[in-house]
Length: 336
Image (tube, rainbow, N blue to C red; front, side, top):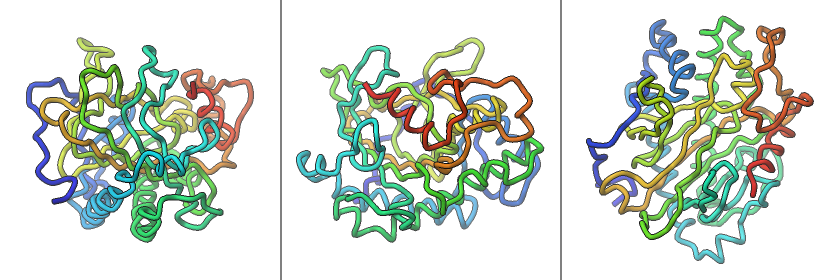
């Protein structure tokens, strides 16, 4: 039985945010309404479902995601001592293993998180630079991981081109900052959260916005929450219900910077899954599309003469950073 088979149902009595459901097939055919709906989604909720099941390319990516999740299970089953041999260097590198129990400044209650994950760099997978070490349970599936990386990266670029077109700027304005053969922070993240233990004061992952350009999330259980934008529920956290056949897409802070605030990066967090889903292991798979390390973090030409919109005060506007410098400052800011 696979990790995504026979999972408990998502309960029908918990608050959810009704984010937009966008059809990949309609976007691929350049449907004007669907492209407009995509822009609206990332300017309001900051998240949308992308229905991949209605197009052959999307169906392939869905199968790849399940395959990567299945082959990663052996890496999580290693002893903690063995996994720690591959630990990412805190505050300096995001690639490698992150154990559960990390405390982030972004959580006002300073609760340890309950999620462990492996971050696998795109540049290590594709041979763009020398790779760090990863468990053999992952490296023996390098080709599967590489294929998923290439196809997820292409999906992120596809989204960026749609958004550029809707903003009336050259289609590659954002895509050219995220080239697959450029050194960057792009990576796969494979996560595992153990069943919820109510005796522990922990959080799945604390409230945060993502660093980069586009996040492509595959999840099969609840736990992801964003803040409602219903005027009557402003700021209230509510679940994003996983939908079969759909990835969940959101933008990161880089897109706020490049668009000078015309696009949104929304706060989100991971909490115990609702109902009976809280009693099983929660796995998810993410691809983070991030700007190339040497890209200058400033608005694209269309927005350069506007007053600069600060990105949450996390990095500062005292100078113009490259994406590599910007990511390093973000990591240091968020480390305890």
